[in-house]
Length: 251
Picture 1 (tube, rainbow, N blue to C red):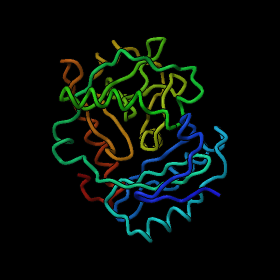
Picture 2 (picture 1 turned 45 degrees about the vertical axis):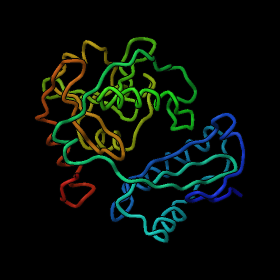
Picture 3 (picture 1 turned 180 degrees about the horizontal axis):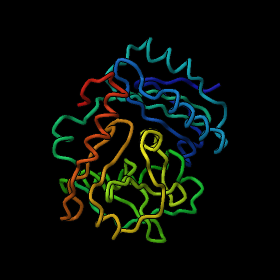
Picture 4 (picture 1 turned 60 degrees about the horizontal axis):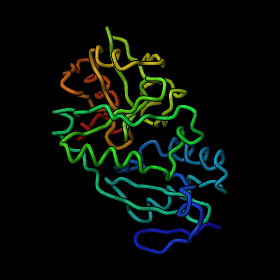
């Protein structure tokens, strides 16, 4: 039986602490949890594939959110062999982020497309955090990873899409990335081509946008002095906002 932890309670020491053998999900909770079923399904798939122990029941998570009255927050669920940890934080993305768009850069750190854990949201997340901190120190929003073969993978906290001549493209999972929940929503609701994308193809695209469960859909306005348009992205974001908010504007 895992120890259930919320807030500043203590946890059991296990391989999650010693070796990063653990997984997590970050869920947007508005009046209700957004894509809760998809998040818990991905969480349990990771638990099983990485042999971390028993699955997490969606009914328990749903009841936990209700009992703690969690609303308009980001809820993080962390699972190790001995612990089930719930934590929450404020959602930092505001109207101005969507109006300005993200400014990104290319990190020299390479994703390993052959890694056994790159497709899972594990506690081995330090590389992403380091790149994100570099972004913040330099007034940027996101770092973009390529793999050892030179193909586009993802951002340090996001999945990435490009638009060229009205067609939407995103890297294949095999390139070495975490397949996000909102990434899947975009693929399910639009004609998206999953393919291998080079740096030149990215820089020569018309539009670039990023997705994750907290930011939703956000345009990239600039990558290393290259400016991008956002005509199709506006439509994609509007449809996404309607899907999760019942037509309300997502800010």
